[in-house]
Structure formats: C-alpha cells, structure tokens
Length: 317
Image (tube, helix red, strand yellow):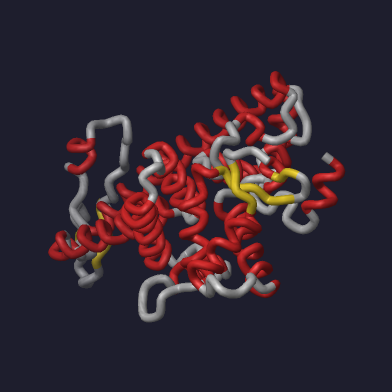
C-alpha cells in the first residue's frame, strides 16, 4: 500500500476513536454511515470516480486530502448541537434545494471557514493549492457563485426601484392629443418607449429613459444580449472539448485531470456541460457530426459515476 494514501477504513477507525470511543472497536453501523457520507462526498460533491483511487477493493484517500475529508465527514455525521453544523447534515442528506440561495450562501462561507481556518490551523502540512482546490470545487458543486450573483442582482434591482420611485409612473410623454367640437379626444401622435441600441454608449441609451419601466426594459434587453453571448461561448467551449475528446481518445473528460487530489474545479464544469447537452440532444448530435466524434454526452458525465455498483464497474474496467 502506498504511503501517499489512507484507506477509508483506517480513516473511519481514526474518527471513531477520536469522536466516539478509544476503548471500543468501531461498530458496523458507524462504518456504514461514514461510508455512505464518503460516497456522497465523492459522487455528488467532488464528483470523481472512486475507482481511480481504489486499490484491492479498498477505497483510498490521498493523504493531502485527509484532513479536509475527515473534517467534512465529522461535520456531516457528528454535528455539534446548537451550531451551524446542521448545514453540513442537510447538505450530505441532499436536503438543500438549488433555489435556496440563502442556505447555499451560508454553506459556502461555512465550508470555506472550516477549510481555511479550522482545518488549515490544525494541519500545517496542508498546502495553499489543496485548500484552494477544495474550496473552489465545493463552491462550484453547490453553485455558490450563482447564489451570490442572484442575491446581488435582486438586491440591485430593488435598489433601482427604490432610487427611481419618483419615475414610477405611466405619464404618456410625447403624446399629442386633439379634441373635436363634441368634446371627444383622439391622438395625433402617441409617444413611444425608447428603443435600445446596445451598440451605443450607455450614457446615450439612458438619455431616452423617463420611467422605471424604461430602465427595466433596458436591463431586460441587455440581459437578452448577454444570454445570447453566453450561449455562443458555451457552444464554443463544448466544441473545443469535443475536439480534445477526438484527439485524445478519452472516454471521460476527467481523464485529463491529475489524480493527486480528489478535488478539482473542473468536474462541476464538465457536469454543467453534461446537464446542458442532456436537455439539447439535437445540439449534441450536431456537434458530434461537425467534430467527428461520438458518445459526447457521457464524456461529460461526472455525477454519480459507479455509485450503485462500484465493484462491478471495477471488474468491467
């Protein structure tokens, strides 16, 4: 057995002695619970294949990752009462909704504090690269940046509406009205909302804004431009990796990653591509035909690989 790894069994026994009892032998119930937590960590959080670190049917953990993995397992299984450790329990029980942005933000900050402050303080051998890899990988996994962005965007929109409350009106600027001899009125000219030309400087665009609705329309039109640009860049990224798949002959995208650590920011990136293509089978086929490759969807699948029957998968490998 390489000295660069610790088996999950050894780590479980270490946790049991430190947290439960140093007099008794670890029971099967505890071993199974820690194993389940570890499976969730690998399959759903860092999204790696356990088979890449399995040796003689034993799950192994790189020693560089040991202190972080240990801390996460303890927090998820043995939370301290009346603390925010319950966040870890909900997380490892897969009980946090993707739209629960407040909880995701709190979890992201708590995980970062755990790794950078608590774990790093106790483990002086933990290097900055490993710390950053784990924090970034976990933040990506829980969509931490997205939760922050949505919250900040919502806050700024509320600020916009508060600051422009005087302009919250439906006054028809630019309307020309005439009346006839019977007291009836009709429009000679009806004012128009500003048409946004996004090629103009922003200060020129804003000159045509006279109401909250005008400002909201500008934001929405810019959002449509940004959305289209992001979709174009997404497809460019996918095509670039499809080319790499063709040239390397790899069957899975994470074969391009090193195995020095369980954590990598790239696995969630690849899984995001999988989710994107899963909803767009025609686009997937078009890219495969254009690049000259196949099985592109599964190339990017990271989550829950080999989760149900890793022994059989190991045999088939």
